[in-house]
View 1: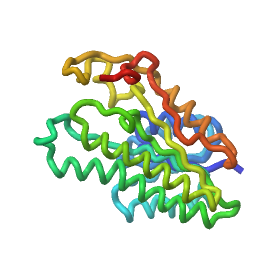
View 2 (view 1 turned 90 degrees about the vertical axis):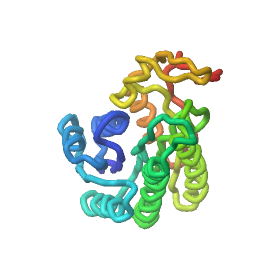
View 3 (view 1 turned 30 degrees about the horizontal axis):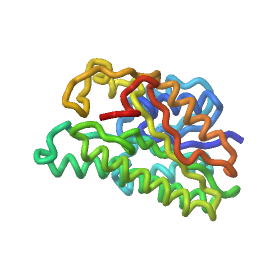
View 4 (view 1 turned 135 degrees about the horizontal axis):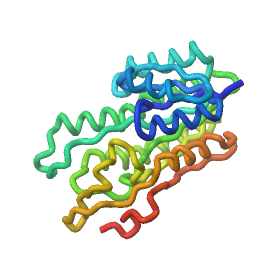
Length: 247
């Protein structure tokens, strides 16, 4: 019987790449995201597996509950949740950071991951066989920030705490949780990196990027482990990007 995954932010970038990689391995994948058109496009690119398009706003409790209900109704269980949906705020000085922008980043990046994790626990604890795996998309900003990224960086640090608490609380129910911290994957959202991004010394410099398929391969490895084993934290990044030694 095929394993079942939910991928949030599945309409583009890392979420799309991971969804397609899972489908190629004959997983059944629920494609979650705010824009139906992009989710349908992801589904149309699939080679293998079964997909279910489920428009979802991860920051909305009712929308998240509907996502997991649709998953249970269609596939009967859940083996993997990839908490991938995320957003950022305009890169401004802290004193100019709008509260609305802060709240939106927290709602999507942190509260959204919590709501999905809570719903996954409810389903994974009750299904037979019991258990499953949750993988959180952390970002290397969970370790070291870029300039003018206070909201994004704060939420990614918080994701590390969410990962640890989820891993601890899931032990009794065969629910494993790990985190993948990604640096400079080449997607539409990161096109500016190759052109030039702010550095800690105030300069603007281009940075190396890596193909997003490397991220998908890493997630596949984490997802493919038996529940008796877990990758607690993994960093996958462009080899020559200025992360180690940043600043």
